[in-house]
Length: 102
Image 1: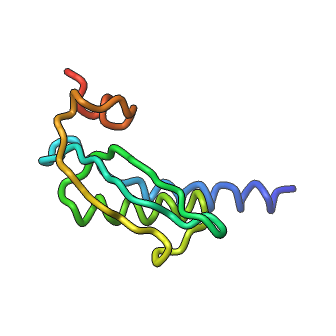
Image 2: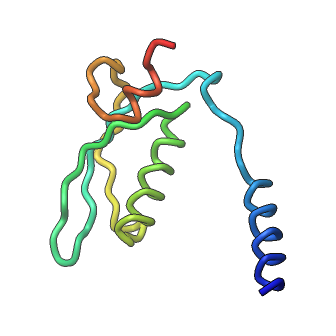
Image 3: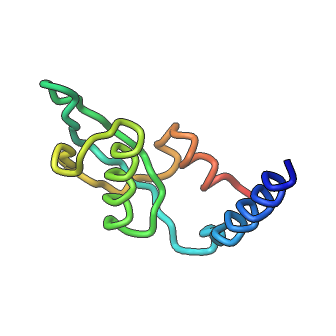
């Protein structure tokens, strides 16, 4: 029993070391991404609103999101367009919470 307590303390100490700093102070913009992802034998279209510093970060977020949540490989994710939008046009919770008046 004591072995597991010690292991839990060690593991929780490791996770605390990887907490990243907040990115609210940087120049973030709202983006709308249109594209499609292969789901089995068909392609599923998507339209996502995200917040990032530049288009490269947006592209990486889309790939990582579909890869982790849906198990899609990057080669099966097609991004048709990435457009900068006004944050007031979006109803996505990520965009609304980031650009909310503080």
